[in-house]
Length: 78
Image (tube, rainbow, N blue to C red; front, top):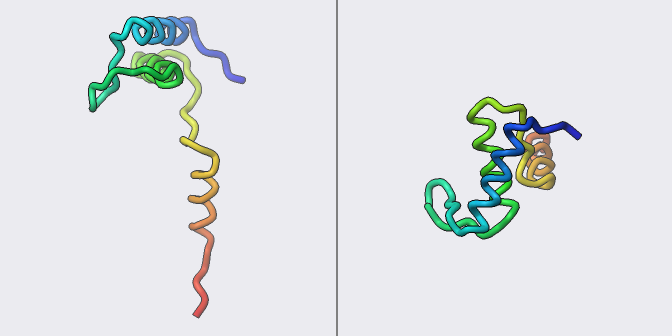
């Protein structure tokens, strides 16, 4: 597993703290964040923007990646 930098760890910790206080809001919608996983994702995203060492984003789900790969190789029968 890849290691996160100290800066990234601090960003995630601050995002979690804001979520627990009810001050963390999501991007476009501006809704309050209540899910801890979403708070971690926001913290990592902010760290990436500031240039911290953070591993690459993975696809939303493994199934979505498999579907995308499978649809590209299908051929239609005539």
